Image (cartoon, rainbow, N blue to C red; front, side, top):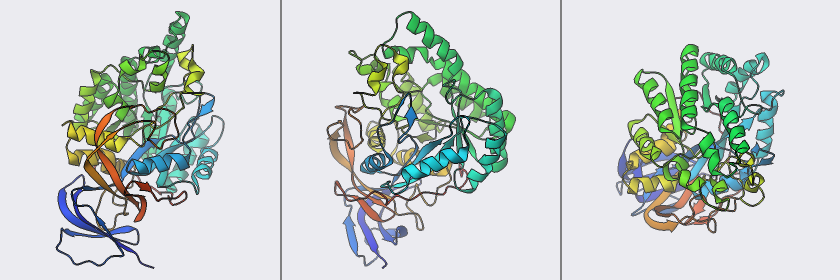
Length: 464
């Protein structure tokens, strides 16, 4: 049976335009838009968005559900994490499947297919973490591109776990240059950081704040510079994840000024939090341990500027939650044993709207960095990231005037603290549709595990 939904009276905001329009949805897709009140469309369901924004569902291109790290695993499952994402106005996530050293990409990807199958409330895709670059895995990359896994993440950090040396990174980039995939880099000098970690611990510097002190901004900048040069040698595009430091951003900006296909993301924690949080007493700082780490507050102005100038293209969350009780506490007495990661998939769209309220970015730029650019970057645009005929009907009715206070007592992520506890923001998700199906209806969850489907991604469409 064909079902039709009509959204009336709202201000439709995309990366390209703002227009008062009615939106007709049919069979899970956007069927048509028309200037408000000019069409007499019949529909099975009418949603009144008067006084509200009608925006594309958010695309969070960097999440870690059920992610093994440091002897534990992130606390959100694909079921709880995608439900929380929906509450926050995000309708597509791209998570990371993990290759274990000595194992194939195929085995790692299949394990993640199994984790996500039948459990997600919203649509999902996968990047592939490549932990072991060799002849076999390089061949496998071609096959994965064919099934919609078109991006591969490597690390200059975490020696002995995810780390790749410069030769391995170069070979992966050369492969990406031939098959159209995009290499994503976690850029920190992990070899040097490990030395600084051991020296700090030997001095008795064990509190969470030292996590930020040993992971120096200059070591993020050095690794960013190095992977940019490797990408130049390989003639491959490059996407640097979770950029946190002004010095690293400067390396990206310099490369882009040369016309190189180098891209970067940052995350809300780097825009709104700082080393002040890492230094909170009584081990509370452990809640804010992530890598790259939080930086001193003065880095924030540079990151906002980078988002305005398009030296940074995407804001993702790097959502990787660990409960304070029982997980973060593994690092009491040794900051290097605190699981690295923070919750945020539910907060991103609201925090970025708060940035609109505060004048850091425009409304259209909000949609660009949270919806359109990640969809383009990772081969989903036209289907995701916009409101246009033919696109999936991933649509959020957003109340720009509603006020809220972020808190662990009200969020839906499966974690026992909020990184933004007590933060007051203006703007709130009211209703969410995923492929035309109501997932959040007037602040009530009406979705279901298993609605979300796997997105077969194309190669990058950015720029364009």
